Image 1 (cartoon, rainbow, N blue to C red):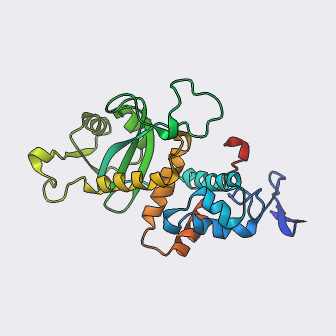
Image 2: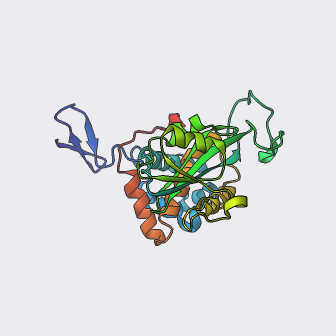
Image 3: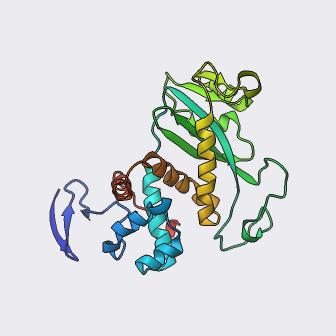
Length: 275
């Protein structure tokens, strides 16, 4: 690598191996954007009161709502690209369900009629009108949450999204749903089933599933502030909420700095047309 002049007062460099030039922010969410002086304030607004809405951010930073949207998802895509950490020890897991949404889609919806202002599911109970989100938490503070599919989640879907994240010493703690029994057997994982009617809320004094029950409730409450999240972007929001939860005991300024560093850790080259 060697210096390769400046462009718009920013130092550029030249890679001696591939011959490509770059600067200090290439491969980060800040790359290719205008008004770099607004970025630190933008990161702070993403954590104040657990995240402000796009219209409020647009007003406060004097930018278009579309710009605020693109900046948000460039950051969240970068956070998501880092992936999840492995889970160890006692791991609580279960799934939750959120109504599928095509919010923001510019053309017609082929598989159903449009719903007004989010609306409600036409079918009773859990159906393919909902997306399933697998959530897992260990006692060390690690958090996993990801969309698994539509309708009731199967053991194979759980394995697809979470199968490689459990360490050998993990003890999976779930309710009596058969999908997790099959998943644990498939991966040869120690499994403790919590049957509230039989065992009560705590089994053997240490096994319970209260942490993810709280997490599910707080996640759905947090999502309400966005007046519905499109399913295509839901994994981004799951990573956002996960990051806020992992850093909830820190000052807002420290959390915003942490998001900045985390989003710049791995090179990403997201462009506007990818949205």
